[in-house]
Image 1: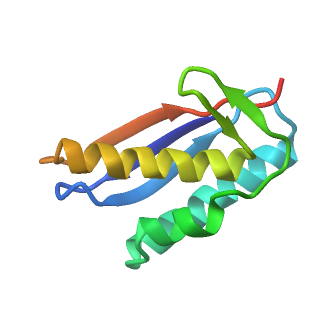
Image 2: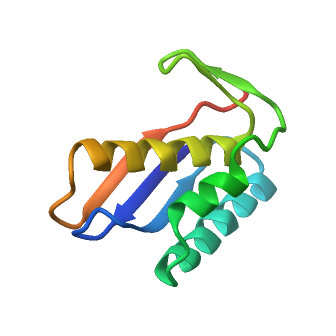
Length: 109
């Protein structure tokens, strides 16, 4: 699963794109819907931290993410982890222009 976080000059996340390769149409559709709903929420002022709080820990089929030394409990848990990474990175390196933050979230094989 590939996640792209589009953000504004202030480093505020504004839109989420989720791409899933090699999975059935339903999983792709559900995750596209999640990305669209998160984007609308962000554009209407819902803090990304609220989405992280709500999506973190949702479990389905856990997979290991050895590159980051963690378990990802489900695609939406991985999305929450990615949003948290983006926020942490923005605090350590403030964003000064509009751009995107890309991440790869491991999936079950």
